[in-house]
Length: 361
Image (cartoon, rainbow, N blue to C red; front, side, top):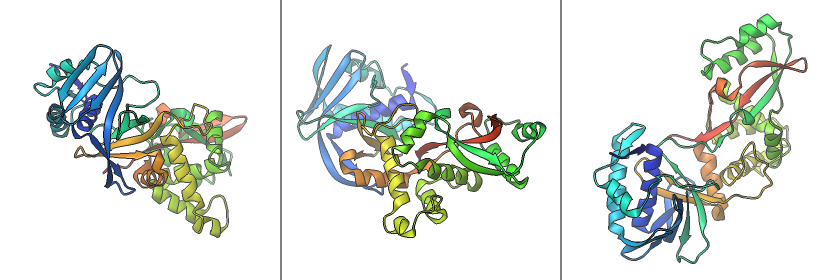
């Protein structure tokens, strides 16, 4: 019996659902469907190379290096609903194929559940006509574990200098000691202990020089904003980006004029710029020049299997959706190497990790 991960089944569900419907709804900032875009063609990289699925009135023409056949669109609808049913019914990581699905995949000559790609896209869509420009999409789905928008590991760490008091080495060892190295709550405990002893944690720098430069492309002072957000995340357990940005507007860590904050929306604008940059190409360990990647948008799949799209050609809606549907997350301290007092050039620093994912609904 064929088995695959939830992520693999989800990608096939999304592909087959789009082929069956022949359309994709554009989402608004609140996550509701608005206009519907007709799909003429889906292009996907598979085991034997580039595969093109041409959507016709009643059927789909599948064209690839070793295939050129027609399949009824209603078959894609039937199989997509079978996959959706097992995804919603099971919480297991590995799921067996529903009866009949394996044979359908063999007929399609699909041997890799997930697309084989180097440009981070899951597939390309052509809207309206098959000769229209292809648009690269990534799939984000609540039917399986969602990839973070930013998961840079130790390259996404922000450094805080510890001042105010000089701790002895035994005191530092005591602060850093833990029986739960992967528990993010230990990070807040250390921060609070340092402050209770008269210590001060003051933002210093971005740990990785490439990520520092990438953040400076948004604004030279943008890392300081993110540092304050990560501090609030651990000490006050507030994670939503829109709520954190509101607190930043109140705290005003850059000490800018109220007019710039409230009339021009400085902090909100910078945060939306950053989220869009992440969505369209920025990664912590890769030099970011402002040039966008092959990813031009997302297909978002909700718990009920409904599909919505967000594209860079509607930047305002895309940015607002990201702003109101993302949150800061706490990575594993031991894995991402943060949350400990570390000595560097006779000074002590504590790093906090920046990780951004989508809110849970």
